Image 1: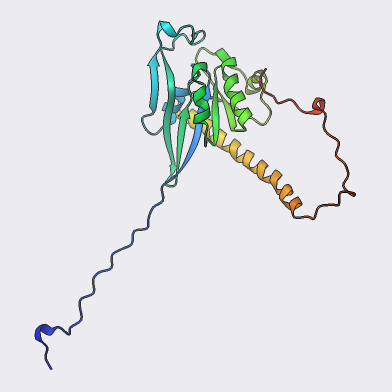
Image 2 (image 1 turned 90 degrees about the vertical axis):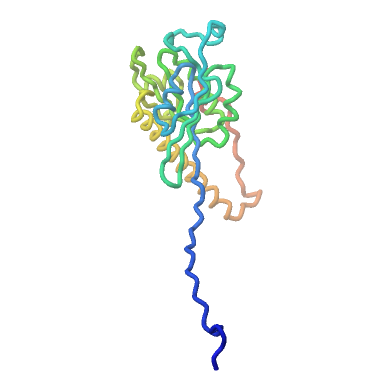
Length: 245
């Protein structure tokens, strides 16, 4: 039997719509670039960033001479009043954010906020004013944040061996000290690579030290009678912190 309009014929199959997998946002990694006033932090961030860096530079004026002494950095005409920001895309899944801290003491209150979530830090040191990096070194040591010291070799600065800088700053043997030229991209990325290697080494050491504690927790504790007392360590026998005086 025939039907009107051939209504018993099969409907054409609609083409399948390709399913596009949802792409997750890249993982962001945060590193700080710290150091004293005029150590080259803004220059460092600008040299390695793949984007035009965000900078909060302002002109130095005569009113700030008391707060920002220019001894040793007389050619400096601007200063960071908040932060510097740059970005490096490592691969399609990882992006590195760089935050340059302000160097002047009156802006140190910003460091606490900026260090939240940071993997580590590059502390720039200027041998013309080496003591200016002590505050940054002390800041990261107290908070357990891994860092390296990168000696920014200015044209008119004296060249010291890394071990000489280590001794002058009071660093332990586990903190890398490298040379760099903050104006050069290759030199800046080399310092960042040294920091990453240091952070990986720290992570390995922490994992190794945590393993025995995990195994010990699975063993039944000894009875109080059989446990031998542990003598307290006297303060005189503890090692020095290595922080600058």
